[in-house]
Length: 414
Image (cartoon, rainbow, N blue to C red; front, side):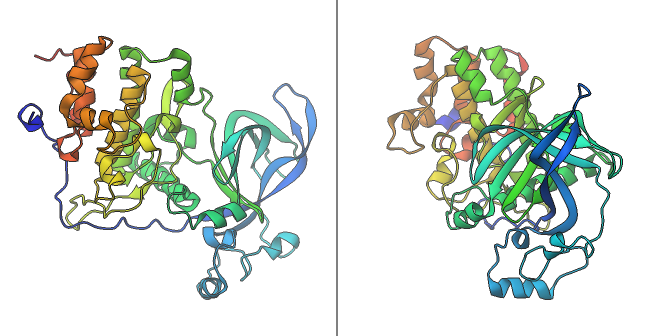
């Protein structure tokens, strides 16, 4: 079967040449913090002494690499030559002023974070559920707010050791990505000051509350998604109905569109990296994000081949085969795999290789007759899956083509 005789090609695929490397992110600036014991007034009015569980900024800041001491001696020396007044740290990357409050600029403490419970493991560390604390001045007791947060604690030693692993998540780029997205959203709404929760609601992408560090750890603090992982909901239901899957897909596509508008590719979209919060989905884990290269006239470029990264069943075949790839297309591929798993409750294949019989048949245009024989999905649902999961990215639908598909619009195909 010649699939091109039956399906429209991707209407948004960039030219093959020239290919470019993704532009680097600017190095993020982090705020220094300390973990203290403090009296906290909880929402029920009771004041409790919380031992070593309150994270507070101390007024210092440093670039990412110096905050964690991740540069070697020569690099540190070069960094020190270019220091500016906005970074209050010593030449060796340590914060000696932290031990001498008389030398550091005093900062009014208005916000802190209470560590409440351990949630799960994470690459380089652990994730905790916490609560945002506020006070009006330094003599007040910290007061618990209704705003919950997720606190990812990552050991600098683990981050340093992981830098040699080609496919490990990159905390530096994850932070830079979230800062980029927050700035992009603020610019999009006219430069007004926005909260992380508001930006997350509209973009369907995780947004930052704070990025903090001390001598031992890096802390990324984001709004807490109370609904948990989408994958957990799927496990409870075995598979989703078409209506529920359609609702989720629309929300995920909103997030992917914001990534595209911001010139980013996630590269690790999966059901594990989609959270549920207040009935909406939120794309998380930005540690593999890349900036998409563009020409001077605004034409999107293919990204030069890189490394195999991400969860195996979601990796686009061009990435798996170490070929140049389009950042938009690889994210839409992963969304298509997510939709397959939601609708069927099964993995489509073990690995994105032509040596895998399911992969070879599903991506070669034979998914429709195979799934039709199961008699569990509508014809339009099967059709959208096939069009999202062709082997050649030029034959897959773009984001807007997916949105316009009859299964998404409710208009029956003819």
